[in-house]
Image (cartoon, rainbow, N blue to C red; front, side):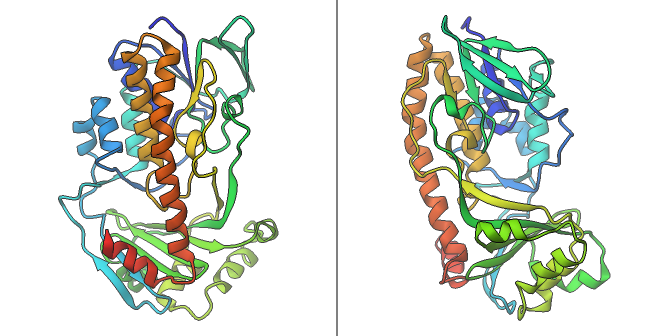
Length: 373
C-alpha cells in the first residue's frame, strides 16, 4: 500500500492497528496528544477476552509476550449487599479464558512493538478537513499541519475525527464514577481489604455501588459509582478536602463500615468520571478515506468489559482488511460491515448490564448475572 496513513490516538485500538500494519510492511503514523507514554496513569486491570482482545494480540504477533504480563489469581469475583453479606463468591481461575493484565503494561507492550518514530507525541489534533484534491489535512494545537490519504480516528470518546463521519456525540448515561484507592499495609483498613476476597469486590444497591480490586502488590484500587443527574455533577466540589469526600461518604449512610472505609479512607485523588456512551447501533455512511476504531466508533459503559478488547480487535480487523484488499475503499467498506453489528451487540449488552448493576433489583441482579456467566 502506497497510501499515507494517519492514526489519531495512541490507545489500544490505534496501537494495535499500527502494529498489525507494520508486521505486513505497511507504514502508518500515530498522532497522540499526550507528551509521552508516561504522561498519564493508565488505570487498573483489563480482562483480555479470548474472542476479541486475544485474537488481536495474535494478529499482532504479541500473544506470547502478553501471556508473560498476565496476573494470575486476580479474576476472583465477590458480590455483597450494603451490609457486606456475600451473595456471590467465585475464586480465581488459573485457566481463565479472560486473564487479567495491567492496562499500563499492555499499552507499553504495544508501544514497544512499534518501529521507532511511529508515534508523534505531543500532537493534539485541533482539526481535520477533507482536501478537495483528495486526502485530508490535519492541524495540531502546536506544530505544522500534515496531510494523509487515509485518516483513522482512534481518539476515544471525544474524537475529533468522528465528525467527518457522523454528527453523533456521547450522552451521559446517568452513572458517574469517583476513583478510590487504599495503599497496602494500612492497619485500619485490613478488615476492609480482607472483605474484598482475592480479586474484585462489588458492593451494590439501587443507584450506587462501591467496587474495589485487590492487586497483587496489596494495593486496592476501584471506584464509587453513583446514579446522579448532571446537575449534581456540576454541584459537587472535590477540590474542597473536607466537604467533597464527606458528601460522598454521606451517599453510603447505613452501609457497613467495612465498605464505607473504601470511601472515607481512600487516598486517591477523587476524580469524577461521568460515564458517557454513544447511541447503541450507531452507523454512518461510507466517507472516503476515513473511519473509526475503538471508543471513537462505539463508546459504551464498561459493564460489558469490551472497551479495550473491541478497540484492539477493531484495529487488527481494519489492518487485516487494508492488507488483504488493494482497494482502500473496498477495505474500509468491508471493515465497517463487520464493525457495526459487533459494536451494536456489545453496546446493547453494556447498556443492559449497567441497569443490572445499579437498577432496582441490585444487588441480587448482579449476583444472578455472574451466576449465569
